[in-house]
Amino acid sequence: MLKYKYQSERRSNTWRLTLDEHRDRIEEDLKESPSLKPFIREVFLECYQKARRKASIETDLPINTFPIELPFTLEEVLNLEYLPE
Image (cartoon, rainbow, N blue to C red; front, side):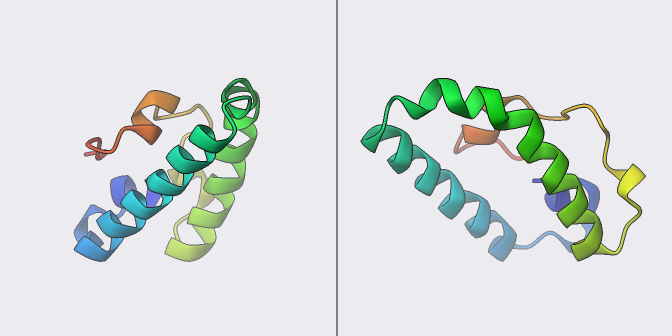
């Protein structure tokens, strides 16, 4: 989602498909193990910090391009219809 938001000129259907596939996986995992729902909230910020680092490496943009504070809610991340603009 960071790449999609901060490299808008490079957006593609492939990126949208990747977002959709990962959301489907998370949805399936949560259905199979509902006890993970509280855990996902606990690790959300930690995962985001890792995502900032990885997005910086992959896009070759400085890490400070990506805000320290979460730019997306967990609900937005999991929402199949949501795309950051």
